[in-house]
Image (cartoon, rainbow, N blue to C red):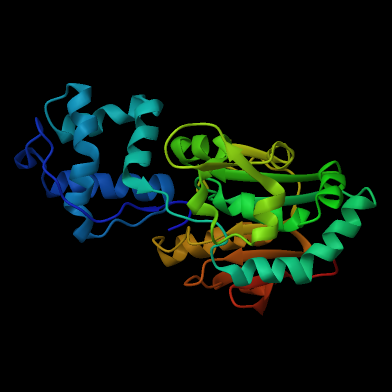
Length: 297
């Protein structure tokens, strides 16, 4: 799962917090809360998963039960952030769904490079960036395997925004250091040009080149909330973020993405996601889960 997704399955009893004090009403409150905050729908089969993820927070709070803990959330934004992080997880990898990067490289990159080198501003957004694998792949594909050409491009007015609701995921993305094996799927010329050995003991690690890192701005952002961005984007990636949203939430979000794209800009979504609702009038399909904003570029 990339970006925001429901946590993986698994049930475990948490010492000090008995499942007996966790009832159906508590789960419904949790499900309503996470839907309101993130758009995610927690089905009934996630009931014990929610218990196992939140029980440590309840225990740490010193409150007697889930009900009291949930009552306390309205006045504590920090703990609310921890609840969202506990109920979501981030799973992604480098060069995931490679047909998207192939399309980006062949269909978009030449014009983006031309415009950037001519002094135009280029804006890219990875929405639900998780721990950074998507945005780093995208930027390396954009810069290309030739370091001299890529460095010239890196000094242009090209800026990438990478956002996620999880502060923990963003910390991993900003660190820009990964087990070397995690980059095996990345084309070797890109890995050789834009990655280098990272210090440390244990499993070998690779770090993303500082020149690439300097091009990306990471921001905490809840896609269900207000978006501070005033200008449009040429490219938006939001892949496998919406699969646990209900249909009205998906349609509202995709419409917002469409309106945040410049005319002729591109939206890339996950392999199981589709465009429907009002956004269908704004976007035209140009490839598998790839859409172009209608209007002259």
